[in-house]
Image (tube, rainbow, N blue to C red):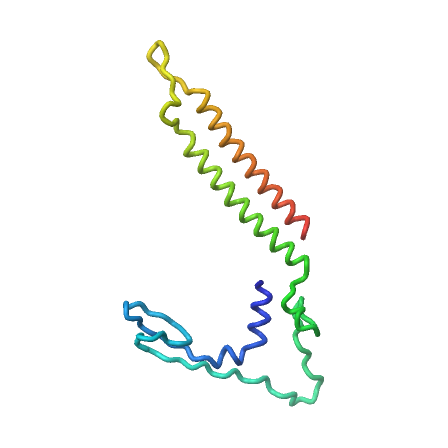
Length: 165
């Protein structure tokens, strides 16, 4: 995705630089920067983009400069849109790592909060004390299994990422 943005940014500098940017104040009082002012807003500032200068012609008579070719681009215009399979697999692996780490944080937080006994999970003893019920122990064991599963998912995601590299 980053490469696509980079390619488009390099391919369209004249179109991007030639736009006018408006600083406007909406009727609610908020400030916006936009390329077209919304109706009812007050234009505070207007900035026109300057066209970019073209590179100088080959004055020295030497060999012409070679164009820069980015990976994933080529004579086929659709090649710029399709990233190599390795990049897609790496991006997918990185997304899975992020999702797995988020799931792990959620599971750890649920375990932390779940350690507090719920009403009805303490049983009274004949001597006046209390003990935790088997329901509490099974609930906490389930939360601990969720944490272990999330940790295994994170380890698997990192292993998949390392295999793609």
